[in-house]
Length: 265
Image (cartoon, rainbow, N blue to C red; front, side):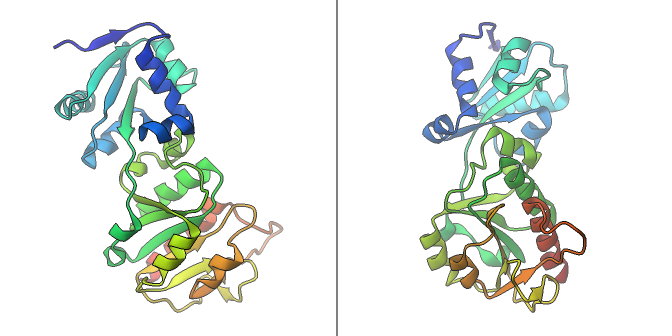
């Protein structure tokens, strides 16, 4: 069967896919948008096929594109050929990727997390910046962390900006979301150390004795960890500021912490 061709910017399918740039639509549909053949390939490697695959008319033949089309159809999804203006409209870019995929969101329940499956996990409290969150997810993947837990009102990990920043790791890393109360109750059963970061901590980030698996807890970009969550940590540590800057970007700080913890494991 031939792929469907859409050329109209006002087509309902185009409108629905474009609407996934809005959090309200992502939450109501449980879907999100991933751009580029590399992202699609990462998804396929994790056993995730698109619900909808949009392929630009100018897309070149490629074995991975053939694989993506076949996987989409095999999973009951649809492959649609679209024009360049439609790709621009959906991606909100002048130079869009030629392949876009619509995927189902996947969250891991706290109850399904197996701490012993990895020496390091990451928990984030009220992260606001999608680029930071996406970069942290990518870093957690690179460092071999078990997953990322989002506490309270964090930015949407499936926003277009966050997904772009993951560089495909959004498909490889377990993502959980929870309330502060639920996290604090669940944390009581954590079998290793819970390590927080605070500017007023006395321990350096390399000095604390840890029990594994370790859970690295990072706070909001502006305010850091709340007192309540800092108090729930077995130890709080700080990353020394040796120059004029008095703080680090959250994603950078998380990367330092994650690699310090995993290297010591």
